[in-house]
Length: 209
Image 1 (tube, rainbow, N blue to C red):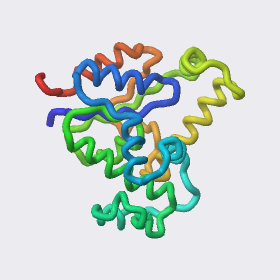
Image 2: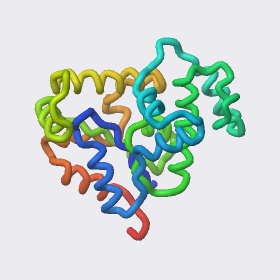
Image 3: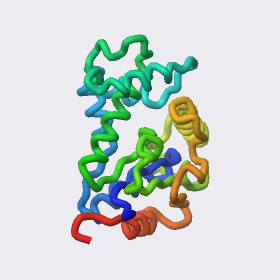
């Protein structure tokens, strides 16, 4: 089946977000990143910053049985009473699941992060990718983009990726960055962001192609 939807998972500092945006621009299809957070915040009533921050932390106790219960009640999603025993983080996951599935249903698009590769894993029209690069490349890139911080670039990379890894494991049961979870893994430090975007765009079937 043709691939219409691109999901982009990425190491912090690898340029995955920029690559995903470039693909969307080349193919003239929607690009979803912070839009996912915005819609989750809108549906739950939580502040967008709160949604973004909680989306990177994995709770210590799982309540996934409640999640599947809620997923079976789509009419309840988005209502405060849908929490029904869920932790805040798990409730946000339920809504995130619904938002991403709905975005994919609307047609060709690029979705960055948010466990979108797992949420859409049963769709045949998706191309799941992971963008990575050497620590040196990523450290230099975040210094250039974000400047110095209280922590060293290496510690910032480790902290951010550690949260993503734990969050992904908690909600999916899979190992973040493991090649078997994706159709394609690209080293942006070696290939360059522009080349990565070109390669990914060439693998998608977008409107008019």
